[in-house]
Amino acid sequence: METARVEKLRQRMEHLGYEAYFTSHSYNRRYISGFTGSSGYVLVTKHKAILFTDFRYMTQAPMQAKAFEVIEHGPNVMEHVLKSLQEQGIRQLAFEKEHVSYAEYEQFQSSLSGIELIPADSLIEQLRMYKDAEEIQIMQEAADLADRTFEHLLHLIRPGMKELDVALEIEMFMRKNGAASTSFDTIAASGERSAMPHGTASDRVLGKNEFLTLDYGAYYKGYCSDITRTIVIGKPSEKHREIYNIVLEAQLACLEGLKPGLTGREGDALARDIIAKYGYGDHFGHGTGHGLGLEVHEAPRLSKTCDTVLESGMAVTVEPGIYLPGFGGVRIEDDVILTDSGIRVLTKAPKDLITID
Image (tube, rainbow, N blue to C red; front, side):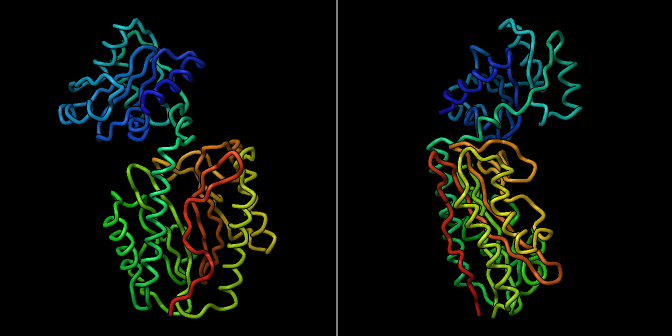
């Protein structure tokens, strides 16, 4: 798998005229090499793929990065990089400009004498947008775990619990059932706090006749799931039902219309236009979705500003919402894979309005 990814990276490098490409970004390093350690540097050239790491990982790295030459580096890894470049007769090095600080760039300049430094765009992130069969299978398993977690919660949630108690139940269940951790800080936002799109759990006590928005995901075998469901504790009012049904209509319309060939902007509009039609456009302030994979937020995006063309193999979330300050909010989110014929929905937890007494 890593060998195929290295070859795809080399094809992009050749197209752009890059002799060598360097990354220390943890997710890109893992994607291209298979190495899961916390410290390492990848150098890919036309003929070599090298992973530099320290003493702690000299047993682990060769086992995981089978397509790579593994070299133990000393205090200054760039000295080893320079030596490798010189041995290969390479006079330039492309690096990931999004992930290199100014201090690191200064170190590159001082350590790589005679090497032309080229700030490059996100070559590996561009590869990561297209999920292969193995990645999709892992993401499906992560989504299945998120679905099972929601079913588990429905038997436990009750008035009088704290949001923090709900979040703890989510995280414990996922960890007990195979997740390494959560994909992000769990959101459990009730009552007026559900109007906060990123209302991470607090010590607020669940009341009656109010929304509870649950947004969470399982970090599983290196990949993320990300699901949101909104339920009502007690009896829903007409306002609760109104905005819930609008968001559900928008989310289902986006799922129905999403397909390869649309831009991220057009995918966003599938949901946004419906919410705006009902007069709540000003209460939907975030994008309809985002890419998903090794990271919980990656390319592409479903937003008003994204002109990336959606293609088969890409993974995105679909998560429109309405947020009314002082009252509450609704968000409904699924994970999907773009396919040749449309989409494959990974998350399948029920979306009809659920009430808990």
